[in-house]
Each structure stands twice: as C-alpha cells, then as structure tokens.
Amino acid sequence: MKTDLSINFAGIKFKNPVFTASGTFGYGYEIADLIPLKKLGGIVTKTITLQPRSGNPQPRIAEVEGGLLNTIGLQNIGVKAFVEEPLEKLSKIGVPVIVSVAGAVAEEYTETVQILSMQKGISVVELNLSCPNLKKKIICHDLSLMQNIIKSVKKVSRVPVIAKLSPLVTDISELALTAQNAGADGITLTNTYPAMAIDVKNFKPRLSTVKGGMSGACVKPMSIRCVYDAYQRIKIPIIGCGGIMTGGDAVEFILAGAAAVSVGSASLVSPENLIKIIDEIESILKYKNIKSIKEIIGIVKNT
Ligand SMILES: Cc1cc2nc3c(=O)[nH]c(=O)nc-3n(C[C@H](O)[C@H](O)[C@H](O)COP(=O)(O)O)c2cc1C
Image 1: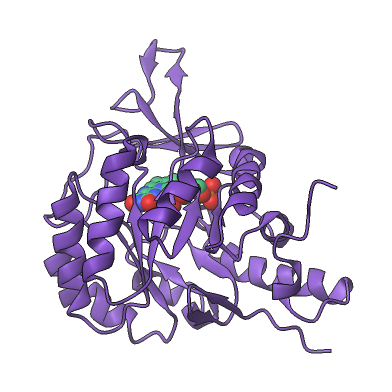
Image 2 (image 1 turned 180 degrees about the vertical axis):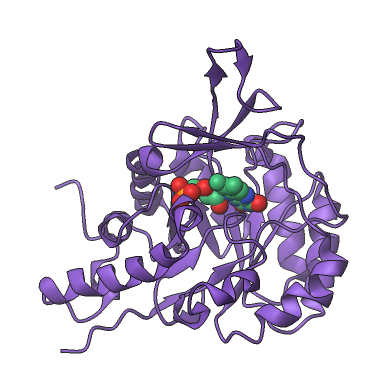
C-alpha cells in the first residue's frame, strides 16, 4: 500500500509535512551537499528583516540538559541581499519556500513583504511575531500590534501569511484566534521558550543577553499542548514546532492538530534527521495501516 504523506496547507500543496524550522537551517540552500533537499516538505528560511542585522554578541548558544538556549538576535543579510542570492538558489530546489520575516514595527514587516512580493519562488510568508531575543518585548504579547502587522502584511502579500507565535502566554488558543481573526492563513506553534542558564564556575550567565530562547527535546510536551489547545479553537492550519527529534514526535504533533511540522534543534544535531523523520512518519503510518497523513490530523480528542 502506498502511503500518501502530502498535505495541503493554506492552499499550497506540500509533498510531505516536514519543514525546516526558521533559523536552524540557514537560508536553506547551503545544506545541499549534506542532504537531498528535494525530499523535504518545505524549507523555512531564517528570519529576514528589512535592513541587515548583525545579531547579538557572543556567546549566543548554550547547550543545556534536554535542549539548547539561543540568542542569535535575528542575524541576517537583509531582504534586498536575500532576494539577490539565497532566494534565487532556493527557488531552484523544487521545494516550497517559506520566507520568515520580522521587524520592529508594522511598516518594517510590510515593506519587507512588499519587496518579497515582487519575487518569484516564494510559496508562503511566515511572520516571526515571537522572537524572545530582542530588546523590545515579544511582538505577539501586544495584541493590537500583532493584529496590525498581520492585517497590513495581508494587504501586500501575494502568498499565504502564517503567524509564528510565542508559547509564553496564558491562553495560546486565544492568541491563535486573534491571529486568525486578523487574517492569518495559518499559525506556527511555537517559537522558543524564554529561558536562562548560569555558569556555576564563574557565576556568569551563559548567554550574552542573559536570557534567550529554549528549544529541543524538553519543550516538546509543552508545544504539543499549545497545538492541541489552539486546534480546538481555530480553523486555519497549524505548523507544529518544538522538540521534534523523531518521526514519532512529529506524529504526536499531527495527532494533536498540526497539519505540518517544523524541525529545528534536531537538524542542528544533524540535518539528516530531517530525512529520517520523514521516513519514520511513513513507517508509522504503514504500520498503522493508514493511507494518508491527512486522516490523522487532530484525531486525538478529549473524550
Ligand atoms: C539557533 C536557533 C536560531 C533560531 N532562529 C530563529 C529565527 O530566525 N526565526 C524564528 O522564527 N525562529 C527561530 N528559531 C526558533 C526555531 O525556528 C523553533 O521555533 C524552535 O527552535 C523550536 O523548535 P526545535 O525545538 O525543533 O528547535 C531559532 C532556534 C534556534 C535553536
């Protein structure tokens, strides 16, 4: 029996539900020598901003038990340089490209998406509304700013717009619903969890900015809970993200309500994990005698 891993996310067809996670796979094309990029469901680029950004000072990564903390601070070459080279190379791979975008104010998001909208080769825009590593507060914690950004980006975007949200809220389903009502075509749940670690040898924080974002295996159950809660309230599709290390982890997210998944820390350990995760999802479906991945989206319910 042939297993169908394809999904339709916000009107775009993906051959399987496994995407890279923003910021953990560079701009996407650099990994071409390491894994067959064509096998991926989708490639999410690192977050792009209107102007280039050098990011936060070192140290920007700290390994901790169960995962890692980062405070990269959206280092990137800026949208104009991005469309000149990385996008050109990415669009030749033959996998849908999801460009992650951030800014400090609504106009920055809109201008960046306007520039992207003049280009070919972009399937979806993901708004990073949840970076925990900037001096300002996390954007989606300001509901009217978040709504403003989604509404103004929707006016200029030629492709579906996804809102990537922070897990650090009292009611994730309310936040997801607010993003949906502002016009988002999909939601990514979640970005990293604000966190910190201290070196007991020198009594200093392990990250230059003291606090950073936690990702990796230990965040998985919390992110699955976010997906599950949001799925009960919203109609738009969800990309599940946070701690996916195996195909089984990905299937858990899908059972909770995700239509697709993004894999970050596991691909930093080894990009090959992305391919393994796709193969493992297929094996699980075969073992369970399920023809299509679409059959299991959100089937776990509180009965
Ligand atoms: C080193 C690093 C850089 C990241 N950079 C970004 C980024 O630029 N934009 C973004 O939306 N998320 C960024 N993230 C968050 C990931 O996309 C993802 O949401 C998070 O790591 C949880 O998934 P994981 O546990 O599979 O890593 C970054 C994560 C890491 C570890």
